[in-house]
Length: 349
Ligand code: NAI
Image 1: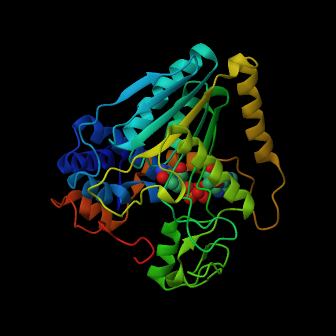
Image 2 (image 1 turned 45 degrees about the vertical axis):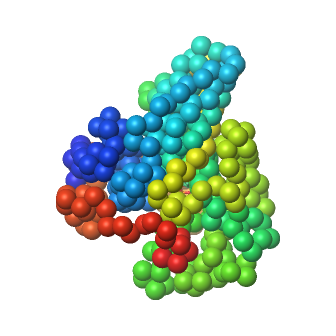
């Protein structure tokens, strides 16, 4: 099913408003989800609406949060999301970080006590759109073994980066620190197909190719990815005085409870280090250089990070966004949620 971006945003926003969010917050979440679908990151798009709707309806997201922004130093601040929707809190916190970095050269803004905030490319894109460098990291629920471990401790703790080139060019890197998203394991289960042994481990901590035996995901690049997810948890959890590591709340554990998650935005103003035009020139040249690298056998070309997503956005603007039929049916139905997520064991789906 193909829908325009406007129609998809309207459907998502209407559903979340019916679930209990204010129109303003429902619109804010819809904007981030449609951004993800338009980039082809469907794992963080419309497919999440029913889960959010259930959590909102059950009180596990504060639908009338009292957001508080507190400047704690010339370049530092903390945004308290009061456990409202993470997408809106993270966006507003980035707006503030942008203002501070324009004035002071750099801003580090912690976003504390939020629910899931979706695809981080949205927030770093806000900074790049204002000719600034954006970096964002956040916590997510413990589903990943630390290197050498047999039990999950860290989340898929993503890292995102965006920088502006010339004439609206943008380079964007946005990844979970796990080899594969959990959604890919679910996909293999639905097709009864084996998974590569680099993705996940069983309950003994041994690599498994059986998607039904998965008990935790593996970090990217062994101890190095494990180190990165540790860094993300320190910056977006311990630094903000929030639960960290294995104590980070689970996505599905209890949908009536607030999640108290953390995120950290870092914004750098290139004009305080070189000139903005020299920086933009450098970014655009890098993008071009990468595209001009001779491709290895089996590859059609070298893409710069975020290029394929940017191409998808253009394509979807012309042809509409492809949405799974079941999700479209749910969005256009009167159902708020089907009680499908509460107390679900994430590994037993
Ligand atoms: P991915 O594996 O699809 O892409 C990772 C990065 O690699 C992207 O920047 C992409 O542009 C780049 N890339 C992919 N193929 C490429 C190619 N052929 N050439 C050059 N660059 C290429 O992303 P992943 O790890 O599946 O993450 C998906 C989303 O999930 C992200 O938006 C992330 O922020 C979000 N996420 C959010 C969480 C949360 O709790 N809020 C938790 C975990 C992930």
